[in-house]
Picture 1 (cartoon, one colour):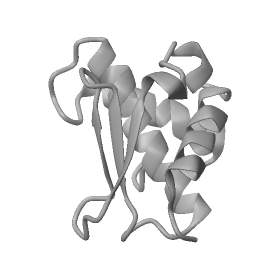
Picture 2 (cartoon, one colour):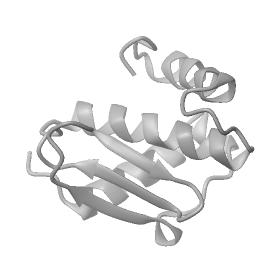
Picture 3 (cartoon, rainbow, N blue to C red):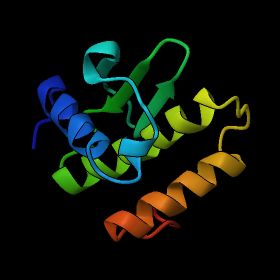
Picture 4 (tube, helix red, strand yellow):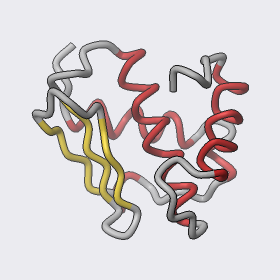
Length: 110
């Protein structure tokens, strides 16, 4: 799969419509800037204050990877919106556990 912004927007809205995301009041996709980056080192990044999510087109080549990386970054949005300053702090870990329970993913891999 070649990653493109349209697929990322659709994946974001899909996840946003599912638990636990739908209870988090995350901004709609038209309020978020989605960027495809060329990183070979980082799968993604999130910047809550800029409402920006960037995902690596070089490292993400499958739908499953896209959903998991995007969910990881959305957990950053959740934690950052609530004032958490640690990159992978308590709120972020709580969010990841909740995501993995709902979607059947391994929290150690997300």
